[in-house]
Structures are given as structure tokens and as C-alpha cells.
Length: 298
Image (cartoon, rainbow, N blue to C red):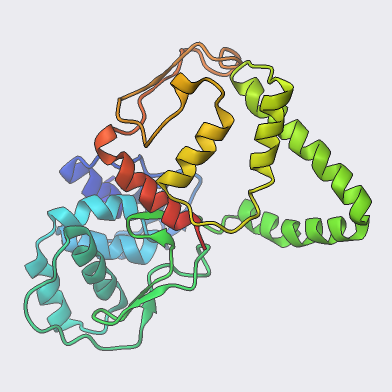
């Protein structure tokens, strides 16, 4: 039956976003029903008109926030469509969210005076997603509470598996355990952990580190808890400290395209074909790295 929401938009405009885990479609059900691989929607709940704006509003309401699709979709949506909808429903949560994201992804503001009404709303529903405190956009009365920024946001749904892990409270329990060990036992445990991590890291490259190289790598691991802004210079400094061959030391982010090609150790057991991976183009390395580091820093 007919596709709805994000899936409808992806098919109509052939977006390059990752395939949806549960695409929405019309089905003979009495209410919106989520299955393992689809979102089944009764005909009376589906959008009455197959217009792009209607499909995106439906998606926000029933499918949640998919920034990857929205970043591409809103560049194909006319700003005038949103302006007209704002005039008729100025307090609508989903209209305001679309307007906020439309301006963010298109890099410009909609024209005219927008008489936005209603209280401030969160972009991500805290009951459905892991969220951050957020940054309020006064123009649209929308609070961006995602993990990171609109340039680089990590979306984590509160699935049953995630909720079970959160309930374990692993970090607090680990901290309580370490505190109860005593200083001498803690120092011995950390020394073993540093050495074990060093050996495993070099094992990835099938290398057995010398004593000097291992000590240098352990020294880097011990700096992990020290607060320091992450930037290109710091990453270059870390790479240079871990690499012994001067010819392999970097001076900046890579300026040549590279790729990963099989066979790799352990791959044959899980993959019938050899993996081929082409990392991001050099044209967007600095932009993507800066965005990801901003998201990683508190």
C-alpha cells in the first residue's frame, strides 16, 4: 500500500538518506501500529493530501525526528508553504519545528513577520530520545535539545535495550567500585588497564610495540581525564606522540583521499565479500571534524 511520511518523501525526491528502519505505510489496521520493520497507519489517520508539507508534518508527529531526511527534504520544500501554514496555525508545534529546521538547513530566514504563538517546545521528545539541556530559538520558540548541534547531531532513541542499560547505572556503579578499592589497588588496576589497552590498540595494526612506544602510548592514555579543548592541533599532537616513524607523522587533517579495502582480520567469518570503504572527501574533513568535536565536548 501507499508510503507515508519520511518514506513518501524519500521515494518522491529520491533522497540519499539511509533506509528507514520502520517506513510508514497505509495498512488495514484500526490504529497506528509499530512493528519490527514498519509503521502501519489506518487510512483515516494518513494525510488527506499527498503534499510534501503534509507528509513531513505527519512524519514529525508519528515517526519522530529524522534529521538526516529532514536536512535533505526541507531544501526541496518551498518556504512559502511553511509561511502560509504558520499564518493559519501559528501555535502548532510541528509547524514551528519545520519552520525552525527549514531556516537552519537552508541557511536563510523566511520572509515576512511571523506571529508565532504558544509556549516553547522541544525538538526531541525526552520520553522518546536521549536529550541535552538545549538551546532556545526565540524566533520559533523551539528548543534544540539534541545531542550535539544541527551540524552534527547524534540521535539516540530510548529503545527497550537502551532503557535497560540506563537502568543499570553503569558509570556510578563503576565509580563506587573503584572508590572502594583503595588507592593501591586502584593504581594497580589502572596500570593493567593502560597496558592492556595499549597492546590491543597496536594489535589492530598487527604491531607489537617496543617498550618506549608502549610507555609513550600509556602516557597519552593517562591524559584522557585532563580537561583540554579538542581541536586539530591537539589531535595532531596526539598522533605525532603515538607514531614513531617521522614520515608517518601528520601536520594537519589529511589532504589526500584514502580508503579501506579488505581482506581484514576476522572479516571472512562475518562477510562473504571483502569490505571496501571510502572515508569522507578531503573537502569536508575540517567541517565534519570540527562539528563532531563540538558535539563531543560538554
